[in-house]
Image (cartoon, rainbow over all chains, first blue to last red; front, side):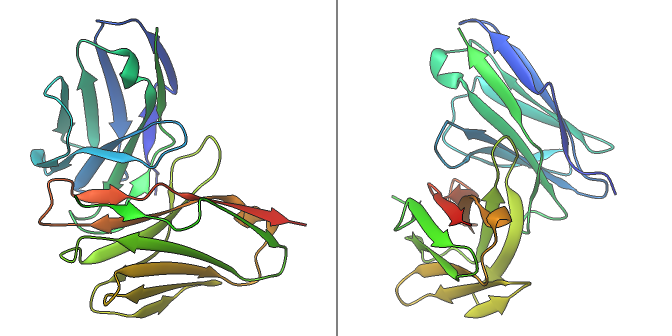
Length: 112
Length: 113
């Protein structure tokens, strides 16, 4: 059973650029969620996808968007990057919309 | 607003002692609660969960207690070991909330050998 993997592990961008982060969910998991974790804080829910449909969205602007693809892959896109977008971005998958989540180790995004 | 909070941001315990990490939640509609452990440079790792129709659940060396009357959650770690040193987060699943999953700010547990 493979775990959740995220790529890249680190990324440096400049303000105004766009970024795509990728996640490979655990096999058999129908749900994927994305979180933003600022240094020293708990993860903040960005959105959740269940069977390739958005199933909930946190308080993030529309420039944060996502997709879930067949065969357990997903991506998070962020447009018009701002300095405050610097954070660890975590992907988590689960069997269903309500259940324990399995997290990847995240992508550390730094905005200059 | 809805929030999950921890009473103690840091906790130091002697190796072999029991640890208790507390968490308060404010959304009475939350029906599922999870504790996660996050080590430096890693993603959160599931420890134990509990649904709102239960008061207590035990795992290997860990116990979660849920008090719905005062909206309080706690994680007890028995015989704490150096490998337990990490940041611990409680999280609530809130099906009626805009935020499906709400994490608390975390408690840093340090185990003194």
